[in-house]
Each structure stands twice: as C-alpha cells, then as structure tokens.
Length: 124
Image (cartoon, rainbow, N blue to C red; front, side, top):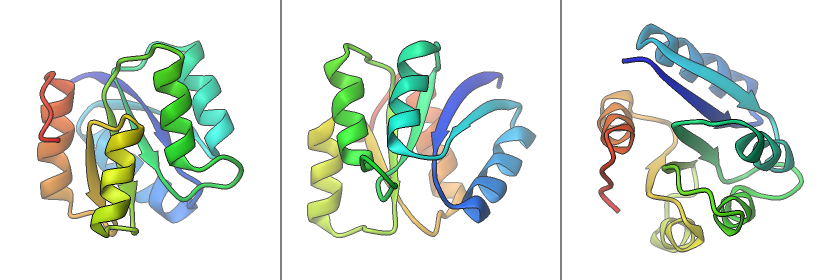
C-alpha cells in the first residue's frame, strides 16, 4: 500500500506511535499539529485520507472537519478521539467524518477502518 495521508494531532507520543506504524505499512504521512494547520494543509495538498484528532488547540477537530467539507473536499476523514461517547461520535460524523476510532487506538481495528476508507468504503 502506498498512500499519502494527513494526520492532524497535537500529542507528540500519539504522532510518534501512529506514524511509525503507518510508515511500516508504506504510508506517507504529513503531520499538522493544530486544527488550523490541518485545514490549511488539507486544502493545499492532495491527500488520500485525513486522520483527525478531535481535541486540538485552536479550532477543534469537529470544526476543522466542518471547514474541510465546506471547502468542497470529499476525501475520507477518520476521526480519532479519547472522547468516545455516542454524542462525540455522532458529532464527528455530523461534521463530515466518514468513521470514528477511539483512543487509545487498537491498531487492528484502526487498520481495518483505515484500509476500508482508502479503498473507498465507510462503515459510518
């Protein structure tokens, strides 16, 4: 698998862990460390998928997803958050995320969702 994705995350430990695993899958990862930077990068470059943390400094992930969708971007977005109550999941999907994965990430579950979204499917 060769894919170019954007990972929007402010926690350095999460960035380190997930980027290492994705690079082993031959995924090219760009990182944005806040919501504004994530929106700017998503609109400026062609990514195949966005991984969006929801709790971010500045604009949160929900707002970043809303802005990306409002700009006409239709690429798949996988929301990531430790806030895994049904209302948070529903809010992420309503903002335009295609799917949701709770933190800490179970990599086997994450990988299934990630690959399905890259292939053009969605469980949401």
